[in-house]
Each structure stands twice: as structure tokens, then as C-alpha cells.
Image (cartoon, rainbow, N blue to C red; front, side, top):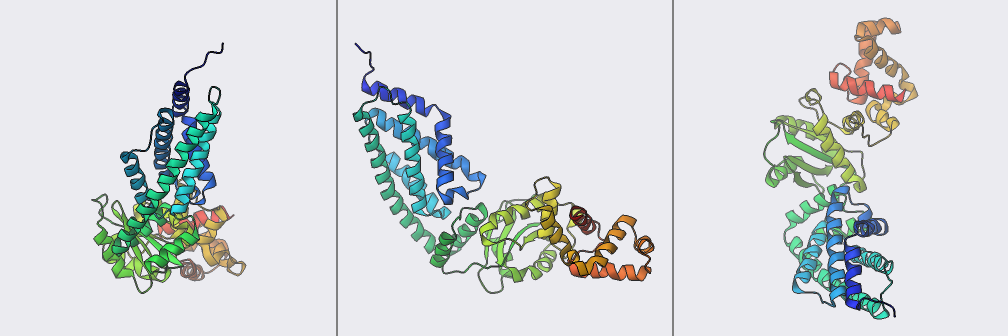
Length: 391
């Protein structure tokens, strides 16, 4: 006679094995990340949340299967809460539901791998639990999405702020989804744009208010759509690229400092924000001249110095040197090299067999073409790094 556990005990054993195996949840997260494009574009900061939801879902569904249970009001409230959060995130409901279908497939495979001892009725029971859960989830999410979308539409300022929050977090992987959301809000995002991250120069202070960020935005916006939000003690603004010329002046008047990124596309707002925020974290005090803000070039040089460059050395060199990389400006690049190596205009002029005034004229041309003054310590350093990595 074959010794067999009662069927309920077999399900309980498999439930315990699957639920206690951390590889199952990691497989769910990896599968969702690989198969659902919206999730593939999320930054790493979102993974713990996805992992926590996956762990809860796996544990709950296995429990219902092992006990022949049904979804309870608390489960429905949890589904509605998750749906409302995803609607506020801007993640399309179709993508969220697809993620749950992918997770259900992984869970089915995990149970099937431990199939000895199960009967057909156990398999049908698992299918029934998963289909019922997915059907209920679809209904709850559709209703919650509709309610949240209506709430957001009624609070336009909050809806616009959440849109920028989502762009910063990289939650819009699909250009189509971003376009649809912009249409619903009745806006057209600026492209090209300037992403400005700004803070007061008084150092670590209290968290910035949304009103302060909006006030800064109101001073800089000049037609078109502009967005603002906050990150801790910093204001984050998405502006038309044409506003960048006014940014340095306004920040100087307010005793603020900032970093403005203008060279990234709308699909890389998250990259632009990370560059700007990291630049403010790592830039030395003398990099913040009055009437000047950090730019793409400064941010990329700082990222390179920190050991996590966001671009190739050649691209960084072009950002900093600009027209100096053109063959017809070779004489200016030679003047810059001689000036940096020799330490003074007079010494550099001797090296190049030029009159000192001719060398100084070339330094002024370098300043005009690159917006970087070789006589300023920080800007000279960025120019030195650029010409070095280019060589």
C-alpha cells in the first residue's frame, strides 16, 4: 500500500515549501521586470515595493489554495489600495494586470515543480483560486483607477506635480502612456526642456514646501507647460529649455544654487534628475559662482570624478569643450592646453611663441565659446579633465 498524505496536508506542505523559498518571489519580480515594459523602466528604488507586493500575493494565494478559502474584505481593500497607488503613479492598468498574470504563471510553475502527491482536483483548485483572484483584481483595479483618476483631475496642481514625480522616478516607460496622460491633463510637455534642481545656499535645512517650489516656477515660467515638485530640501522644475538663461540670474538673486540639465530627452528625465541631484551633492563650494549654475557638463564631470559616469569620456569632452573640438579651433585648444600646463598666460605664450596679449585673447575666445573661464579654478578643472580624457 502506498503511503500518501491527505490532500489538504499535501497542499499545506507545498504551500510552506513555496512560501519559504525566497527564489520564488525573486523569480516573480524578475519575470515582471523582463516581460512588462512599464516595469522594466522602473528605477531600483521601486523594486522593494514590487517585491513586497509579490511576497504578499504569493503567500495569500497559496493560503487560499491550501485551505479552500476565498478572498476576504481585507484582500479587496488591499487590492483597491494597490490600484489607487498605481493609478497615482501613472502606471497603466493594463500593464499592472499583465504583471499579475505573469506572477500567476510563475506561481503555477513553482507549484508544478513540487507536483508529486497532487491530484487533478488540486490543480483545478489552484486554477480556480488564481482565476478568481485575477477576475476580482481586474474589477477592483478598474474601479479604483477610475476613482483615483477622477480625484486627480479635480486637483490639477497635484496631478501635474505627480506627473513630474513619475517622470523623475522613471515610471513612464511608454511614450504613448505619457502622451495619453498629458492629453488627459490638457498639457504639452516642453521639449527640449530644462530640468532644474535648486536649493538654498544655507545648507541642510527643512524640507522645501510645494509653495516655495511653485513660487520659483512662477518666476521662471514663460509660456508653455512647466512643472514643479520637491525632493527633500530641493525644488525640482521642468521648464522649457529657453528658460535656462534666466535661471542663474534668479537663483543668484534669491541666494540659491542649482544644476540645470538640458541635454536629455523626455524619456530620460529620471537620468537628468539623478545627474543634477548628484552634482549638487558632490560639487565643491567654489563651483557655485554667483550668477552661475551647474550645467550638464559640470554634472557629467562630477559623475566621472565620483566613479559612476553617465556618459562616455568622448561625450563628456564634447559637452565641456564644445566648439573647441572642431578642427578649425585647434589653435584655441592648444592655447588652453599650454595655459593649463604652464600655469599662466605669460608662460603659455612663451611656449607657443605668441605675444601674451594674443594668448589672453585666445583665452577670452575659449570663454566665449565654452561659457567656461579658464582663469576660474573650477571651470579650469573641468576644461583640464575634458581635454585630458579627449586626448
